[in-house]
Length: 262
Ligand SMILES: C[S@@+](CC[C@H](N)C(=O)[O-])C[C@H]1O[C@@H](n2cnc3c(N)ncnc32)[C@H](O)[C@@H]1O
Image 1 (cartoon, rainbow, N blue to C red):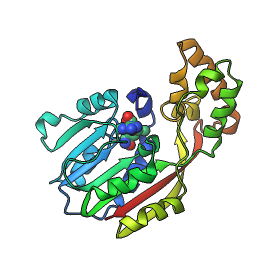
Image 2 (cartoon, helix red, strand yellow):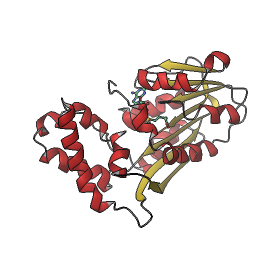
Image 3 (cartoon, rainbow, N blue to C red):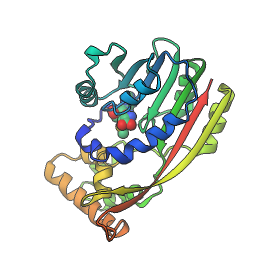
Image 4 (spheres, helix red, strand yellow):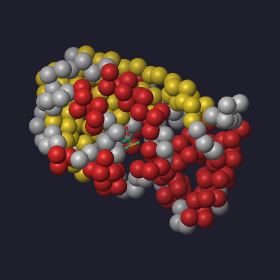
C-alpha cells in the first residue's frame, strides 16, 4: 500500500465519518478486553472511544501511512498513556503479536486486497470469544463513485489514470456471511444507508477527494492536471447532488457492518 494519505482532507468530514464508527463500536458486546487493535487506524479518531469503552485495555493502532500515524501520535499523547501504541504495517500481511480480544476496523479494509483469505485469517488470530468488527463503505454503485470512471475516460490522461489501483467493490453481505460463518460462533452483519449532510462547495467531490477519488488524483503528474480532473468530476456531480435550500448537500452513503465473534 503506497498511497499517501492526506489526514487534513480526510478529517474535513470527520463528523459523518465518525457516526458509522460508533455504530460499529456499539455492537461489540465484549467486556473483558485486554487488547484492542484498530486496523487502518488513520489519525486515531477512535482511540479515545476505545479508552472509554475498555479502560483496562491496551490499544494498538495499526496503519500503513506514516502521515496518518504522525497525526495520530500528535493527537494522542501516548508517551503519557502507555496503553496506547502505534504500529506501521501493511494489513495484507499483518497479524497481531498476541491473540487479540478485539480486532476493530472502520473504513479501512476496503483498501486491502484478498478479503477471502484476509478475513478468515484475522478471525483465526482472535482469542477464544474475541471479536472481529469491521465497517466498510459499499457505495460503489452510487453516482459519486460510478461517475469517476466516466471522468477518467473523458480525461486526456485516461491511459495514465486507468493504471491506478482504485477502490475495488466490497463483497455482498451474503458473501461475507458464507465466508465467515464456518470460523465464528456468532455473526452479525448489516448495512445502513446514511443520509449524510455535508457543508461547503462541491461537498460530495471534496468527500471522495479524501478517499475513493484519491488514487486517481495521485496518478496524475501535475497539480494543474489534478485540478482539471477534479473540476470535471465536481461539475458532473453538482446536478446530481444539488445544494438544498439550507445550503447543505445530501450524500446518501451505504456501508456494511460485520461483527464476528470467534
Ligand atoms: C479512510 S481511512 C480510515 C481511518 C480510521 N479508521 C477512521 O475511521 O477514521 C483508511 C485508512 O486505512 C489505511 N490503510 C489502507 N490500506 C492499508 C493497508 N494495506 N495496511 C494498513 N493500513 C491501510 C490508510 O492508511 C488510512 O489511514
